[in-house]
Length: 503
Image (cartoon, rainbow, N blue to C red; front, side):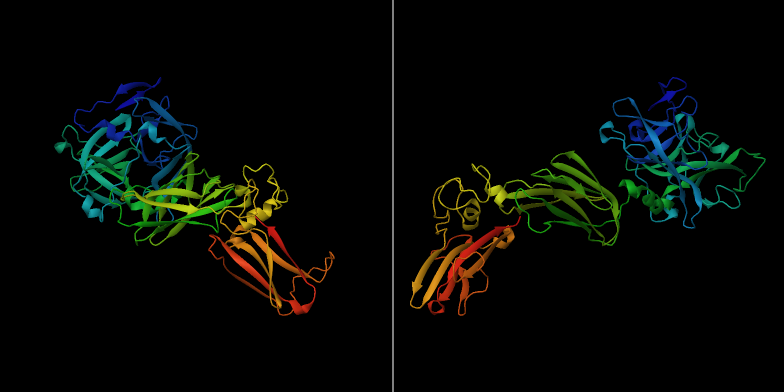
C-alpha cells in the first residue's frame, strides 16, 4: 500500500517486514488528507460509511483519502460523525462516520465485511492483523474480551483485547501507542481481511494481567472496540442511506418478488407497477438490492425505505439496508405516459448478503386507448370523420372500425352501425359493443323518445322492453351484440345510442 506523507501528500511506501498480506485487500482503509493528521486510519464498512474511535474525532472540514485500484488518491468529505450507543443508550468508543458522497464502485475501493462469529469464545486465539498510525501493521493473537469499570469514556464499550509481552515479541508483534486510536484490526478469513475492531487504548499490566501503573515489565493490554457487539446499532445508523453492515457469516434466508400493475395499464396513459419484495425466512436479509430493467423508461422509481437511482432511463438500481424476517416492502415504478405498444416488459434481479442473484420477469399487457388507437389519423378529434364513411372517430373506436379506412364494416367483420329489424309485434335494434368497454372507459347509453324533440329523450324504456347482449354469429373477436327488443303496441318510439369516453 502507498499512503501520503506530510506535508505535500507525496506517496511513500509503508514498510513492515513481518507484514506479508496482499496490500490490495486493504484499499478500504482511509486516512485524512491533512498536513499533520494524515497518520490516522479508518475502515470503510459501506460505500458511504467508515468506523472510527469516538474519543479521537476528526475535523468536520477534513477530507478522507483512499487509494483506488488506479493507484491514485481519491478524497471525500465528512458529512457526520455519530457515536454508537450501547443497549443502555450510552455512548461507546465506536463511532460511525458518514462520507459526504458514496465512493463509486468504479474506483475499486471495497468496504470491509465484519467477522461475526456465534460467540466471543470463538474469536479467542485467532490471529489479529492490527493496524496503527503511520500505516503500520502487526500481528497479535486475540487474548480475550473486557468491559472496563470506572473508566470514563471507555467503560460503556465492549472491548476485544490482545496482550503484548516483550519476551515473546516476534518481528511482527505490536502494541498500541498514541495516535493509533480508530485504526482497524482484522482477522484473515479465507483470504479476506474481515474487520473486528477499532483501536481505543491500552493499559500497562503485569504477568498476571493486572493493571500495573509502574509498567515495570513493559507489558500492555491493548483494547479495540469490538464491532460485532454493535451490528444492530450500526445497521440502524446506516439504514437511512440504504446500507447495513456486511457480515462474513450472513444468516440464511430467501426472498420472493412479485411485479403487478396498479389497476389496468393503458397505452399512452399514466400508470404504475408495484414491485413487492418479501423476506420469506425468519432471519434478516441485509443489503437488499433490486435491479430493474424496463422496456419503456419510467418517470419515477421509489419506495419507502428504498434508495433508487437511475443507471440509465431503462435501468434502475434500488437498495435498502435490510428486510427483517417475514417483512415485505414495495417499490413503485410510475409512468406519466405508458408506451403505445401492446405490452410492457420488466426484468427484476434481486440479491442480499449471502444470496445468489434471483430473477423475476414479467410482460404486462397494455390496454388500447383512444389516444393510442387514433395515432396516425388525419384528424384525431372524437367527433371528426377523416375517412368520410359517416362514422365519427369515437364511434369507429367503440365499434371496431378504422379512422382511415372508409367502411361501415368493422375490422372484426361485424356491422358497425345499429340496425333495425321487425319480427311480428316486436322491433329489435342491434348494435356492437366491445367486451372490454368498461376497461377502455367506453360507456353506451340507450335513450328512448316518442318523438324527436330534444327535451323528450330519456333512459327509461317503454314497458315490455328488454336489453340483452350475446356473441355475434359468426363470432366477432372482442365484441358482443346488444339487442334492444321493443313491443310495437306501445306506439311510436325512437331509440338512439349515445357513446361517451372517459380516459
